[in-house]
Length: 386
Image (cartoon, rainbow, N blue to C red; front, side, top):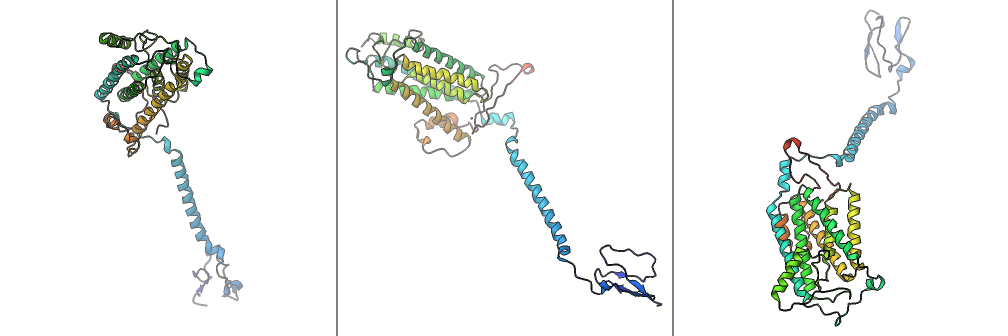
């Protein structure tokens, strides 16, 4: 045959040259090349009726695409899981200048709160002096029945334990307050709550005068119209801090509610709120001082049980209400309608208006040292919603 013959292949439709070519490229997937019969190329028996591609061969591209999609999906899920696992550890460093703008000191507001507490404490001594003149005599009005007194006998030295515990707690809180970095903000919160709680106490003990809780109590004689003597009593009470240890508390009538309970409870609440969680042993120690002091008030029969209960309820609720409002304000959430109905809500807005974030638990030296030897210790309590 003079001219080369071109035989089309039905499967891949590739034109093959004449068999006179010495070497040909063979596709492994294609059928074997045709064979010669008497010098004439012939097809393979199977080439004349080549079967169509199978379903498995047709699905190969689809499987490859599906596997690629599955691999991409798995990669996205793994990356999402890593981000979800480590999202709590991603922290954005805030410059010191911006944090100072979010938590301004405003010492003048702290001074106003301190004067408010100082005035209320002075007013309390005046009310105690006035109420003392109205206390009924023990022979006329015996002590009221108290269930705790029925089961527990009086221990004379127990009230001394109460006052010692109170002095230790107040001292610890004063040192902790001076060591706090944001002492101005925390200080005005403390002064406002002290003044408010003792103002409530002035109201309760003035409108209802209870008889002495025990016949062991010795009250100073009444002065009636002696104004000069009353002034000296007020000054003596202020100089001694109203403590029996100093001998300044010889007046009766300031029973409902207990001022010692207020100081024991309030000191512990502030110590707990503004101390790092890692110092659990410090919190437990302060709690034991507070709890034992409250118990010794009752064991000494210096206050009725109702005095201690009302003082505890008033102190804890005022503390929690104020800090709940402060937390809501710091998170820039709308204020709770019920908490905003308190009479001191305008005072709260005045004190906390520029506090735009939660107060962190950070400690620093009370007196700054030179830059060459300055050391600042920072402890932040985790999980604050402070």
